[in-house]
Structure formats: structure tokens, C-alpha cells
Amino acid sequence: VLAQAQLARGRPDYPLLHDKRLPFFLLINLLGGPGMNSRLNLALREKYGFVYSVDAHYTPYLDTGLMAIFFGTEPHQVTRSLNLVQKELRLMREKKLGTLQLRKAKEQLMGQLAMSEENNMGLMLMLGKSLLDLDRVDDLDQIFAKVEAITAEELQDIANEMFATESLSTLAFLPKN
Image 1 (cartoon, rainbow, N blue to C red):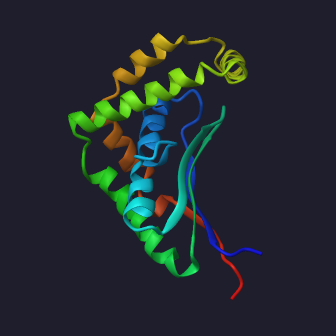
Image 2 (cartoon, one colour):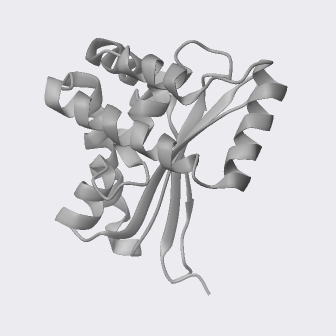
């Protein structure tokens, strides 16, 4: 029995070989990545207590990509929760990240990438996928250099392109009354 409303908000986006793939991954990580300090987690869970968990994901494929935000909430909190998601997306479009915010976002992503190399199975899968899809394997230093090169302006431009309200679709599973 479905007790909570389950929602997904998303859109198609950059494919695997697009030059904006890594900056978009950083933006999604900041918005709703695995850290408890993601913007959506702070707004929907910590500040208002509307959700138990909220995640934003970006999955690139060879010919397209998928960006999605997932959360579950009480049915009477659906509208307020969606409004908070839209507010965070609007803030990312309208307000450029400060120097410290950008630095922290980059450090968090690089830390997550470094930790992923500690898991042998995960590392082998990542290396194999990279070799099959990209015909190369970038080492961690190369990836870190690319992350370091990302600018706040670039992230804001991507947010304006990808987070426009009219370009997003919503899927909601609601419990029966």
C-alpha cells in the first residue's frame, strides 16, 4: 500500500560525450547529490521536514541523458514540496555561486570520486564503462583538473538551460484516499 506520494521531476539532457556533462554533474551533485548538505536536502528535509530523502540524479547515455529529482512526501505536502524544488532550481538559475560555495561543491565532488576508487568492483565497472563508451580511461588527476576548471558562470548558464520550469516534466504516484 502506497502511504506517501512519490514524485519525480526531470527532463532529457546532455549525452555522455557532451562537453557540459561534467559541469552538469557538479551542478546536480550540489542540487541533490548524496551529501546531506545538498540544497534540496537542506530545504525539503532539514528546514521543513517534508521528506525523508530527496535525490537528484544525472545519467548520461551515448545519445541522450536523463536528469531527475526524486522524493516522497505526505500527500498534503506535495504542492509545498514541488514549490520548494522549483524555488531551488530558480535560485540556481538566478544566482551565481559564490567563490566559497563553488570551492566546497568541487571539493565534495572530488572527494566522492576519490572515495569511489576505494571500491574495487565499482572502480572496475567505472573503468570498463569509460573504456567502452569513451575509448579512453581518464585518471583521477585528469578528472580533478576538469572539475577545477568549471566556473560559476558555466554552472549558472547550464542551470538556465536545464532547469527552466517549462522544460521539466513531473510524474507523481499518489496514494488512494
